[in-house]
Each structure stands twice: as C-alpha cells, then as structure tokens.
Figure 1 (cartoon, rainbow, N blue to C red):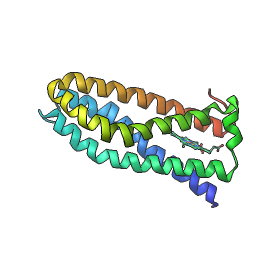
Figure 2: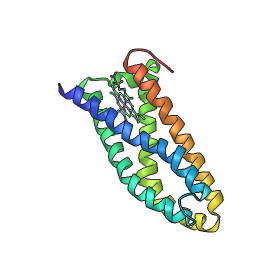
Figure 3: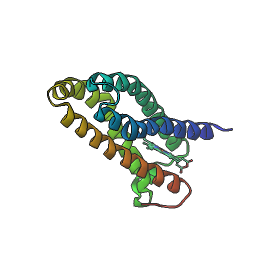
Figure 4: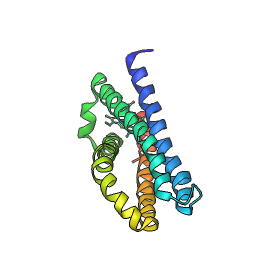
Length: 158
Ligand code: HEM
C-alpha cells in the first residue's frame, strides 16, 4: 500500500463518519427530537447529542481536508482547479469550506449563543429551521460524494 492509497482510504473513511452522522442527525435524531420522543426538554436533548457529534464531525473534517490536499499535492492535481471538466473537485472543496465554517465558526461563535435564546423562546420554529438546514447540507454532501466517486473514475456526473 502506498501513501496515496492510505490517504484515499482515510479520506473516504472520514467522509463516511462525517456525512453518515449528518444523515443520522437529519433523518433520525432531529425528527424524533421535534416530536418530543427524546424527552420533553427538546433543547437539552439536542445539546447532549450535538455536543458529542460536533467533535467527531470536526475531527473528520480536518482529516478530509488534510488527506484531500495531500492527494492533490502528491499527484499534482492542481491543474484540475482550472478546468470545468473537474467541477466535482471544486464542489468537494466548497462543501469542505462550508462545513469548516459551520463547525469551526458559525456553531461555536454564532449559533451557540443565539440558537439557545431562540430555541428557548420558540423551540418548534428553531428546531424546524435547524432541521431544514441539515437537509440542505445533507443533500449537498450526497451529491458531492456521488460526483466525486464518478469523477475519480473518470466519469463526470456534473
Ligand atoms: C479540502 C477539500 C477536499 C479536497 C482537496 C479533496 C481532494 C480529493 C482528491 C484529490 C481525491 C482523489 C481524486 C482522484 O482520484 O482523481 C478525492 C476523492 C474523493 N473525495 Fe475529496 N477532497 C476534498 C473534500 C471532500 C469532501 C467534502 C467530500 C465529501 C463530502 C469528498 C469526497 C470524496 C470522495 C467520495 C472521493 C472519491 C474516492 C474514490 O472513489 O476513491 N472530498 N478528493
């Protein structure tokens, strides 16, 4: 096994843990939470789950970025960012930037402060908004994974 194979395997493993978690949060945890199935204190239940998953997601995002840029440098793939044929490469980096912003800036510095106040005043509306945001991020990630797997096999999906 060479270094690029290891980097690719770690890249995909981290994507599985990260986007698998987003999928679980979107399709299982948030619907149960919104219905009150995880207890009457929906905000407390949400924070208990989110606190634990946020660190997994942050670690996975770091690994995806490091391995992704490592492969790009090692295989000298920088030219791909100048070609529309490799749109899937741009999309991977954009999704990564978006999640990096959400997990390292928006969540700890903006959401943490304001979401708590909002969710205490209007938990139904706040959780519905959060659920919708998760659906957008999940769909974007799934399209990216589809495009990246097809693209790395030489078949452009978009
Ligand atoms: C900094 C951001 C990223 C960089 C620089 C990056 C770079 C790369 C590179 C160089 C490859 C190998 C391409 C090839 O074999 O021709 C790759 C593959 C892949 N990436 Fe990324 N990536 C990034 C983020 C992401 C994200 C956010 C996702 C998913 C949400 C993702 C999913 C994948 C998948 C599924 C593959 C295909 C693996 C395979 O089929 O072997 N990547 N990435």
